[in-house]
Structure formats: C-alpha cells, structure tokens
Image (cartoon, rainbow, N blue to C red; front, side, top):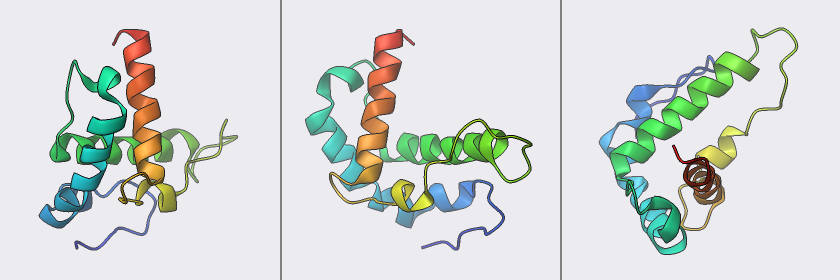
Length: 106
C-alpha cells in the first residue's frame, strides 16, 4: 500500500491508490447489501468511496484539527476510517452518511 502522511491532512494519493481501491471492495459489497435503499440513486464505486473518504478526512482536519481554535467536535479516529473489513467501522460510518444524504434529499 502507499505510505500515509503523518501531518493530519488527507493523503489523496493513499486513498486513490490501486491497493486501497481494491481493499474498498469489501466495503462497497457490504454497502450494496445493507444500504440498498440509500444508495439506489447513486451506487458507490471503489474509487468514489476512496475520494469520499479522503474528503471526509480533509474536512475533519480543516474543521476539527490541531490548528483550529476551539474545535466544536471530536474527530472520528483514523482507526475507524481505515477499517476496510466487511461490516467494520468504515461500513457503518458510510452507511450513516448515505442515509443522511438520502433523507436530506441531496
């Protein structure tokens, strides 16, 4: 796998690397089984999940990171975001995100 950055920001090369994209196949399959009604409009691909994940990490760094005075919330641990197992933490985080997106009509 590609090496990760240590400064806190999102490493888009890591999340878009072929190794990471292949590892996200378990996540995509799990989402297709357990989140059917929320992902029907725009079915996720491995690449779209990777870019969504990188964007989420960057958003957290920009709004809740080390350089923000009085961050409003705690960040989601990277351990959860890098859990590519079927039914793991990332699966549940993405399912909640797709559910919210669907309920808001985005």
